[in-house]
Image (cartoon, rainbow, N blue to C red; front, side, top):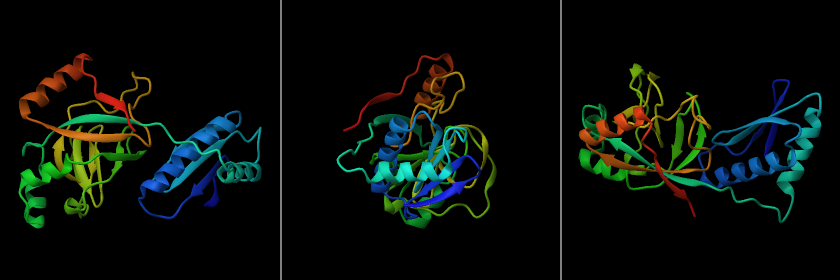
Length: 238
């Protein structure tokens, strides 16, 4: 691990720069250990693909002490924590009215649209972290056959609930925004709400499984979401 100061109240802990499920497990384990052992001085912890940002109360602890304690926690033997996770099943409509980049991907990959949808719904994805918008889940585990480069020119408006592909990642836009990912479908679920506790249902280390729904089912679920009567299917993973 590499340690760097992050402003005046933070420490950045870095792993090798790659998307790797073993690094994800290490980050999740260390995060839980820090939450357990340094809860009196730590303000917030933010995970990413290959890093952990730890923000601390400078009136109670100094940067050098935080680094030493985190390093000691990481190297402590026989105290590994296996992060608990949930598997969430998320409905996605891959109708061409939503999947505006499906035909392009299919043409370049020399595949049918049905094959792309089948592959996208065939695996369990890992939630690596949440950003760049509140509730935007960065998901790893996309089948290599449908890896596809980001768009050279981002769109000014991507619909709320749009499901996209960018290189080896897939993810869902929780709200309307600009975006450069290739859009293959849309989910009617609400991925972020300040009225919920927590505002985003998933956390780093959780699992996601997409399932395909048609336009009518998409409309039905969206209406149920608006009425507050729709709940995602989930279960403890592993």
